[in-house]
Image (tube, rainbow, N blue to C red):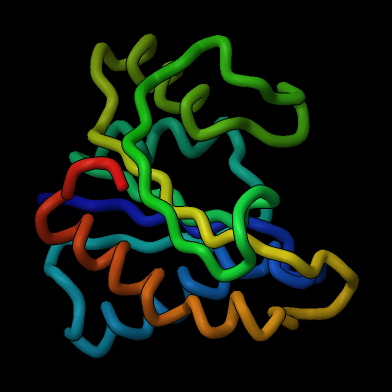
Length: 156
């Protein structure tokens, strides 16, 4: 299965850096051959409209992001569905469900999609400086993404 992993967030806003940081770590695993075949990985600051073409080429997409709600370090996985009403600024960033809806509208189908979030607690300025709780959640988050690449479990 062709899987696209997109880790996104701001690398200069504390725990918000967890998405691109995890994408970079997973890229290393892919390059070492320690990840399921057929996986592409991208690290992004924000989700932008040009990602729709890449979504169209994937059979499965896993988005990775920090979450403001929840206990810091909590890893959650949920299935996403296309949603044209998902909030965005239209000019700066997009919600993953909105991009899936565009993919469905433009190409007639959207990939199976998942969102893995890691709850953060520190949003201060600092280049890739994660809180201890989020740092401790990196391995479980990588395991959750790997599981999605292998099987696509039910929502957790």
